[in-house]
Image (cartoon, rainbow, N blue to C red; front, top):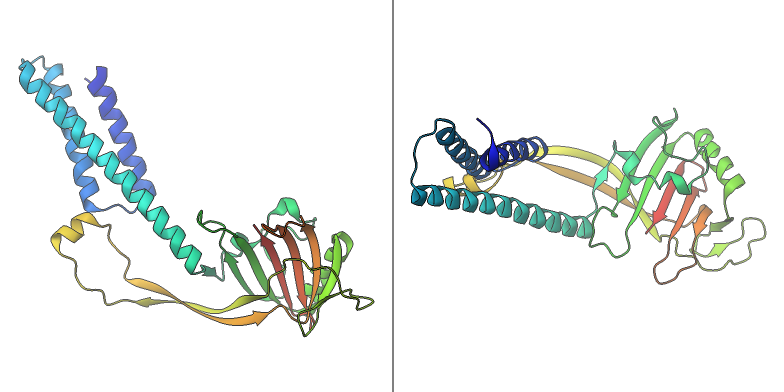
Length: 276
């Protein structure tokens, strides 16, 4: 039955529909549009399979209708996806996404870190708290960066620092005034584009939202929404009083790229940071 142009079209529509349903939380109107297009395509195939006569005029109308429905549905989907990506990028550019569990997303690229500091499957025992920030998923971000903050047993943090000492391109300390100095001599070092501060996440919770009911048209147009929101409480932390281990520093002041590890003076916190 599924032969020729309409057969191929039907199969392609079904495959596309299945992919969209699996990957996206789509609106009811999308189901309706796809269903109409698939049923119309199947109907044309059925008429041909049964060899029932159909006038050229009717055939042309049905073909044009099918073409218009498919074009509109795909165009609508593409437009929605583009707008969603743009809005998501803007949101991520203006407001960071935090997570206490998805710490790997904030970890710098493994290719730029020595063995022992690369992202592992499981964090070492003794790490009590993990938080991350990542902005490089937003295409609109001019200077993206990512970092992960580890807090816990000083003995565990010291293991990261020991590896950093062996492989760092150079080391320094950031004193109480935010000045970059040599760890041993205290001499001022050249300026690098290390971060001025970072945030440590205190808590993430899900709260229900009392959203107004949607009208029928709104329900058709928009995907079902989740009645929850993410609440983030964070504390502002300066990079002052940290030891600094730089692995990569390209020296570009206009668009700097660097990978580094900061260790707090009390040895209870480690920050893996990557720019660009």
